[in-house]
Image (cartoon, rainbow, N blue to C red):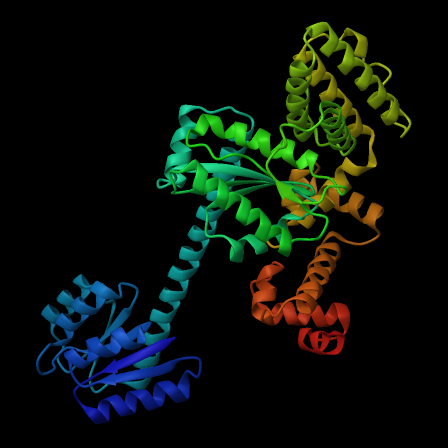
Length: 488
């Protein structure tokens, strides 16, 4: 806490400073003032948390000084000091929000108690402010995810429009990038220092969908920006990362086209190509594009990512419609391909025998069929059982605060049953698993970055750096500083 003492009596100021400094070592007297004018200058310079303000001073008096300081620094708290026990002064001080009033000569114990009461008030206000800020941040994150989902699925409503304009009132155009082979943490950190464009990331395993917004009105210029950004990202992200880019659009209901283009481009960029980023290649050989889309759909289905598989299928179906002149040929082609996928999945031990592929005739039929494929894998496959799902949640949210109850609710189990099941399958407790994962991530940051220990603590979900250091040492038998110095 930073304190400024304002009193026209030098001896009173020095005495107060001495016993505050000696009694409350966590507080610092950063300035003194003999009158209201100097008090205002000192407040502007130091931005104190608390000011002891004498009422009667030459020139600008204490009450007027408070009014002027609060106009610029509304968070500053005041303790009034006066040689007069005047109700009128106290009443006017209360109008300014002053709650503590001390008579001179100041009593040491009374002064310290007043100071501690004001400190408590400040801390409580800051805690409420921080909680409110966190709640607003979480709400904004949720709204952004709803927005990008609505755009990618082309489900634009009046609410979506309002949401979009509320979040990005200055946005004129937007474009998508679909980035494969990169985790969301690496991508988020890279984007922070590679672009000033507002953006939303939708995480989908190792495929990240990013919507970028811009105040530019020229599609030509923004297309160049999109390409330059992809080039810059390709130099920073892992070497096997591919970046598909979609064209810019001004209309919200056309941004889904940009997403589809970026998605298509991401399937066309393979290890055999000479570049790792770009717009979709519209003149690519038809067979090559179809096979890449088929492979992308199969990969997403096998991983149990039904929505992503559906996105790719829309591209695949549209592509085949352009390639074949009859719907019957499209249907037959997809049936033959679906049978191959079914066989490949069944070879992995997943039973799909009750899914009638030959009865699928329309685009919606095939989408329903793909969803059934994915749901079967989700239900029967090891990768999406309750504990695996819980692990994924921990890996995705380790930077945030969450409890066992939160994760149990996420996997739809009671906390008691979830605790028992987690211990049985992982051979460790939930708390130990979360702790070990956070410490593992912090070790990576200690070795790979120059972040301070405080910054690293926040990055892995610890709000108290000292507590983080104690946990780190308990797990590794080394302090974070020792670990960094001995392993680098």
